Length: 93
Image 1: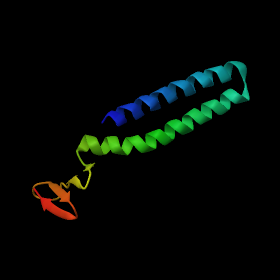
Image 2: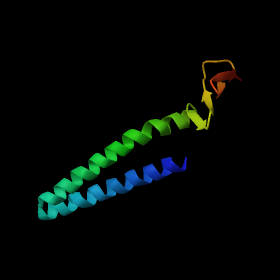
Image 3: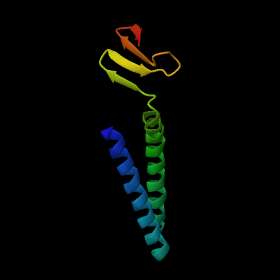
Image 4: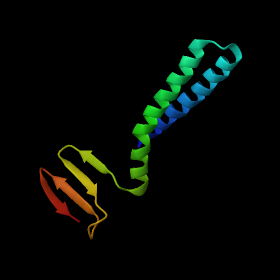
């Protein structure tokens, strides 16, 4: 969960830097500032492509949590809704 917060904060900082670079480019018309704006927007888009689906899955409770050789899958189509996998064996709850 902490990594999601960090990625969202990083995306926000990249959006702020892109807007600051755009304002500087508009005032001075320097090509480097335009490249910095585009680069910030591309990095922000890449980070959002990584973090938005994971945030959406966590908000709906559909995600896998790994801890070594044991992990839990929230499978809402089954009766109990949770499958525990441990060493290649599955246990439904």
